[in-house]
Amino acid sequence: MKKLVLCCATHVWAGDVDRATEHYATYKEANADRVDKLAERLESGNGIGDAEYAEALREGAAGDREDAALARSAAGREHLRRTGLWLTRSCVGRAGA
Image 1 (cartoon, rainbow, N blue to C red):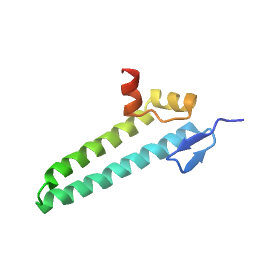
Image 2: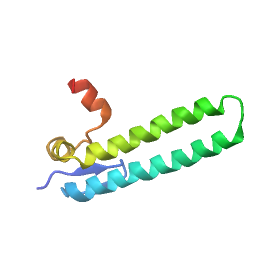
Image 3: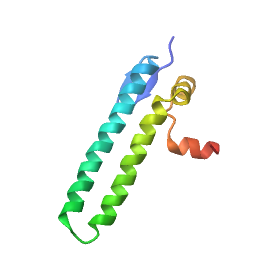
């Protein structure tokens, strides 16, 4: 029996690490694009505190793109194969890398 690979907590790809990885990475990149657009709208509004919030949103978007790159990496795919979990920035930080 193949090990189940969870993806975005809503989809299950029965052992197909490549499809699961691409789905997850695409999801993270699309989310980053949406957050960047929101940050652009905030910056154009000139409201009090909007620039700081937009900067925080952009940092989050950059983190999503980093998670997508980690998922697509050889280490990310192997981690998913072994554990069934995504390799994220927080995992790398805990491992001391």
